[in-house]
Image 1 (tube, rainbow, N blue to C red):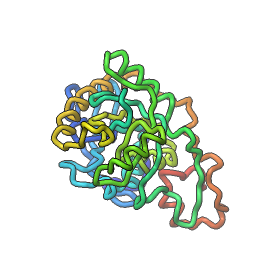
Image 2 (cartoon, rainbow, N blue to C red):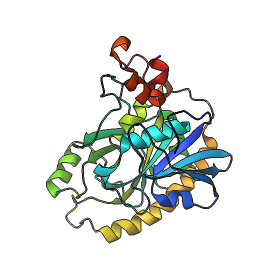
Image 3 (cartoon, helix red, strand yellow):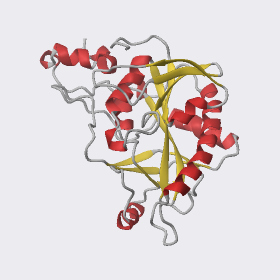
Length: 292
């Protein structure tokens, strides 16, 4: 087990299905089982290389898709990535489309979220310490731009921007819910990007989502969510997402110029003298430089 100490290497993190580290050209170096102060992540993290870049893959639902969206330990997943030295995190997520122009098989580089989850821890800062990070723009525009331009250069159908409604699940939407989200102007619906994106911001990671549209949810009269159809479309989407990842990681620069790297600056509101040693130790990988 890896302890609470940070690694010195810079890695690119990817959270998605287990198939993403079985892609052609990915050289597996090792698997690491990590224990964080928030518990164990979804599974062992696979460390490897795509071209000249070192990457860390984590299957969000665990190998074999064992964990439902609500059962995922999002805090441990993000904390583990931070411990490994990840600075940029790409989320690969299957979604339903809420817009006619986003067709099954299309990719979407998400730029906004609506959080409809109910039962998931939302923050690292809830044990005698409070922090309020800015979240008006919940993804890293620099990282998202690289993903979008890469997908376009590969000739894929990709949409630049879209609002992702994150529902609790595991059941799919009712038609009434699907119509409501369309009235809100939402583009996509899924079950996993919240609180993942919020925690990534608290951890000062650059975060971006490649959403894989698998169906039209249930708002179209002639459509219904059929799991076999969804899985078949998803398999095709995964191949395209793999192509984007392989090309995009080579374009990601070493240094970050965005504000993600300093998201916690000024965000911690609690008087430092009132924060316990235990809490400081627990949050060392996330906020250690602010809690000296």
